[in-house]
Image (tube, rainbow, N blue to C red; front, side, top):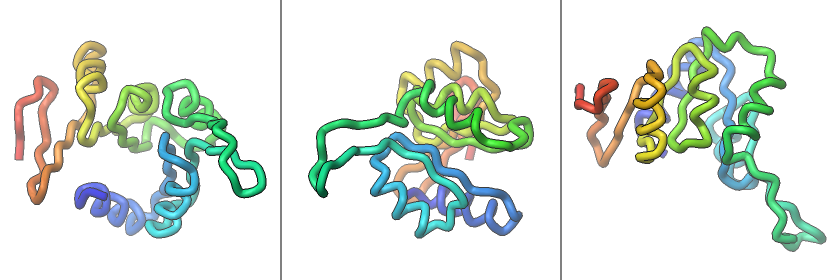
Length: 141
């Protein structure tokens, strides 16, 4: 986990915000991370099993449609909410909130943000340096 992410989660918790993870990663990993970081709720891709053996079936949470379905179930003020994402599956979620941030976005997500002119913070963290990009992709420290 990146320092920026840890610091933001800590700050939100100190402010009394509700922390919700919506991740395409496997549920058994997201559950442990959510417990460790004190998330209030979490949603993740479900890897189904039969008698403690994986069946090969997955209920995905990595696409925009799945994440949007979760968002619709939540009773939160989206205009005052923050969201963080890194892939195109997060784009709809980023569009839905008042304070979106793309953290280490893949090229497709960055292209979508630019194409749709989404007012979105862009954070790039590498090693021990955190960069913030403007909407044109220029670095700001």
